[in-house]
Amino acid sequence: MSSIGTYAKSQMWIDNSNFLWRFFVTAVSVGLVVWLMILVEFDIATSMLCVKMVAHTSQLDELFFKLYSRVVPTPAPV
Image 1 (tube, rainbow, N blue to C red):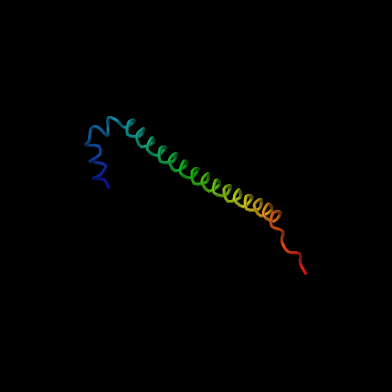
Image 2: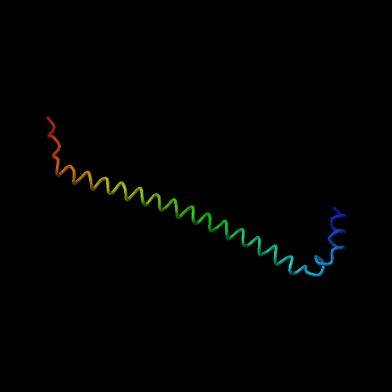
């Protein structure tokens, strides 16, 4: 573990641009979190859209059944 620290300290760009390194890591982390949030929101929106489409389809089926039962009368129960 200490050899990694020694290697990092021997690299001047890591020592000199500590702020830029932190900024890069923070930007990548925030970007990943935002990307995951967008994916989750899209998944929720897609599933809600599917639920709405299924509900809309069942309403259309019910409307069609009502119209069909008016056109073609069902036989009266004996």
